[in-house]
Structures are given as C-alpha cells and as structure tokens.
Image: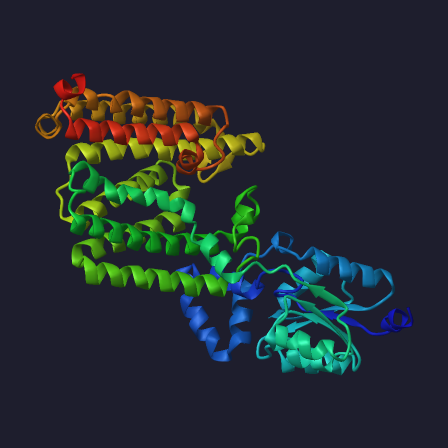
Length: 483
C-alpha cells in the first residue's frame, strides 16, 4: 500500500507503437503515402534528414484518424486508473509530433506529450533524455529493445510483450507495474496474412491438365503442381500488399478488421519484407522452371492486380471485367505450364462463369452496404443492385450454355467414351450457379462466393460429383456401364 501511495508523485510515461496501440503508426502512414507515386520524390528528399525527416513528410500528407487505431485495452485501462488516482500521465513516442498530438487529443487522458519532430527522432536514448529533462524519477511502459535504456533508468517499469532479456534483468530489482502478454506468434500471423483459404482459386491452374487428360504423365503433373505453388506465393504477396494499402478501410469492416495488419497483429514493415520474399521466390521459380512465357503471364497478373487495387476496383463494371480476367489468367498459366493448347470452349466457359462470380461478389457487398444504410461503395450505388443481379445470373446462364455447346463438339465425341454420361455436368453446373445466387439473394453468403464454396458441404459434393462424371465418361463407354 505504501508503495502504491508513493507512485502518485511519480509521473507515468507510456510508449505509443506496440504499447498503447498494437501497430506501428509511422509504418502504416509510410505505406499509405508510399503507395502514391506523386510522393516518391518527396520521400527521397526527406530521407536526407533521417527518420525524423521522413516521419515529418509522411505526417503532413497522410490521412490519419486516431479513432481507427487498434488500441490495447489493458494499457488504456491502466492509464485511466492511474490518472484517476491523481498521477500525471504522459505519452512518450518516436512518432511525429503532429500525429502524437491527434492521439493525445483523442484519448483525452494524457497531461502532455513528447514526440519526434523534424531533425529529432525521439527513440531510445533520445527519448530517455527528453523524459529525464522533465522528470528525473518516472515510470515507463514500453515494448521493445529500444526501450531497454529507458527501463533501466526508470523508477518503475511496465512491459507489453517486452523482450525476455529486459524483463529478466529488470524484474530482479522490482516487480513490473504492468505485464501484458497478448502477442500472436509471428509465424502464425504471417501465415494468416498469406490468406491460404484463397489458394483454392489457384486450382484453376490445374484445369488444362485435367481436361486435356494428361494427368497420367508424372512430369506434367509435377509442372502443373509447381506452377500452382509458385502462383500461390505470388498471390499471397499481392494479398499482403493489398492489406497494407487497405488498413484504414479494413478497420471499418465487420470481418476484415480482424486481418493481421488491420488488427495490429503484424507490423507493416514485416508485411513489406515478407511480401518481397514471396514475390522474388515466385519469380525465380517461374524463370528457372518455366521460362519467359509463364514469367510474362505472372508479371501481367501483378500489373493487373496493381491496376485493380489502385484504381479499377472503384470503377463499376471495369472491376468485374478485371476480376474475370484474373481468374481466366490462371487457366492460361496452367496451359503454358504443361505446354497444352487451351480449348476455346474452356476459355469461353471461364469468361462467363467467373464474370458471374465477380458480379455475385459485388452483389453481396452492395447488399451489406444497403443494410448499413449507406448509398454508395466501390463506385456502385445501392440502386445498382437491380442491374447487378440480372447481369450476374445472365452470365452464369451463358456459362452453362457454353458448356452444353462444348458437349456437342467434335473434341468431346472423340475424347470421351460415354458422352451421354458427360452431359450430367451441365445440370450439376446449373444447379450450383443458381443455388449460389439464391443463397446470395437470401444473404446467406458472408463475403466471397469462392470462400463460401469451400465451406459449403453441398458445393463440395457437387464438385466431387462433377469430377467423377468427367472421369467416368472419359474411361468408360455407355455400353460397358449398362452391362
């Protein structure tokens, strides 16, 4: 009790990045500004002044709302409790002073703030000197190795996911005032950021192998599988970059706010580095194993996704066309990987089928926007739902029509032993498309129809039945089945 009373006269200094908030604010703002080419020259020039110069440049140009940050409740509760006991509480951060002031105003509890300004990066020893100049005796709550000299000088220390070495040495002199352990394992966070549930889309790369019926050749199977693995790495790099660019928007979304970067589970710098590793690995595999043609398609995918993420996803209809082409591009990559000529029937079917899924994705999003009482999102108006629905169903129907025309082609007659059995894939495809649209209309699909298909038992059964029909028709004759 006596120790608690003595704390009242010791000011409390709290770090921002990784302590009060789960993320690194400066890194987030840097990603936001660096995503706009108009700022590149300014960033290079500001780097001549060191980190403080870059932070100042970014703070002037970034859009920042302190209400959107992922605050750590344990730390906030501790600050408010100490403030209610009459203690002075200060925010001490290496973030630029303009950003720190906005957080200071938003929280409304701090008595003051010390932060970086142009020419003075307030981190580590520099932060310690700034604190000691105002308070020779103080309590400090931080999270990183850079805080070790501050903890060593502090009268009282608090830890938030701090290094074990710092906690071990300091706990020998006094018990920590706060000890928070809520960090998610780094590898687990990175794996989630890769969105492995989205890799199912890349099974489209295997379609040319399946429908050319060359799956009995181990070398071609190996090439197709390697191309799929390579593309998964590349796609994951794109997902990570997109998440870094959409942090603010994701935090305002009911489900996307739980993504690793939006929730603060991962720092942006880790995402940038990991995305670069994934991208370089995929390009190296492509160049060494497949050569120029497939590497060109991979670069085309990267260019298209960048164009989509940066601009076209906010352009109605353009966004659907680009999404459709990105799906179809996977089929192209599969054909190039095994050296198989792509059937125009397969490409036509892919065009209409994936256009229907792209329309469905927008339909689902706009239904949610309407339910939230908004009138517009991603360039679409709520009133556009009346047009999106028939366009999506019509393109789905066209994919079934294309499939039936393909079943009447010479290639099918020459390739399959039991063509009559193969016709069963038409009603199976029709069933899945229209049932999924009905689910979307009933608001029974949360977000992405592909993710829904992976989790939906009926969809999985339909897929397995379709594969069985194709294989049965390929290796059997109608007479043999009847006998």
